[in-house]
Amino acid sequence: MKEFNTERLLLRELQQQDANDIYEYCSMKDVIDMIGMRLHSSIEITYKYISHEQKKSETLAIVNRKLNKVIGTVSLRKQYNDSNLDIRLISCIINPKYWGKGYAPEAIQQIIMYAFEELNVHKLLGGHYSFNLQSSAVNRKLGFVYEGTQREVYLYNGKLVDAVEYGMLERDYMRVSQNWK
Ligand SMILES: CC(C)(COP(=O)(O)OP(=O)(O)OC[C@H]1O[C@@H](n2cnc3c(N)ncnc32)[C@H](O)[C@@H]1OP(=O)(O)O)[C@@H](O)C(=O)NCCC(=O)NCCS
Image (tube, rainbow, N blue to C red):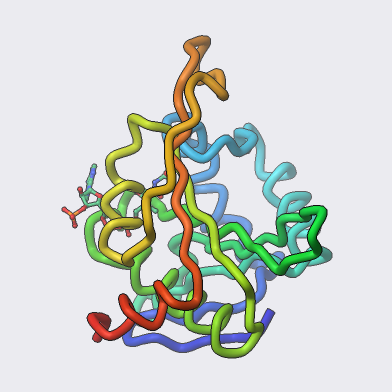
């Protein structure tokens, strides 16, 4: 993917030197469980994760320019479907030290603009476990359209949980992006 600069952030490909910053939050079970990622129980897993993501080129590091630190990642992943439509799933994770400062919406907004204006995707998807109110707030702020809840499709800490699904079509983007700064 390309590089992007936003007001406070640089979005760029992951680098092996990012391992310590990424390990800081990917080693927190409570955090990575919310997104269904594998726990980084050692920094070696973080190095492997970075190599894997570098090959796929679907994930960008979110660098706080002022701190010169990777504070999270944002991904734009192709979803294969029988009609060959370009549909992509956006996901994001932010180090909990930096939650509540609007970094996720700032990064995702940039990726949405890129997806519709440069890649000409047909549709973007977003989603979260039903109890994840933080992610719900981000989707709402960005103007994703709630499309439904799939009941009991994931196991979270041994309990069945529902998945809340969102979508954004180009016409939604044209409407909601008018409210973005
Ligand atoms: C979801 C997530 C990416 C949001 O990132 P963020 O940069 O904190 O986003 P925002 O600053 O817009 O905050 C979103 C909401 O989180 C909540 N929040 C803020 N600080 C919080 C904190 N310290 N603890 C718990 N919730 C908090 C608020 O409800 C906020 O919404 P509001 O601004 O309308 O009040 C982040 O919480 C995260 O990484 N969660 C774990 C991974 C995940 O769930 N990813 C989403 C699924 S793809």
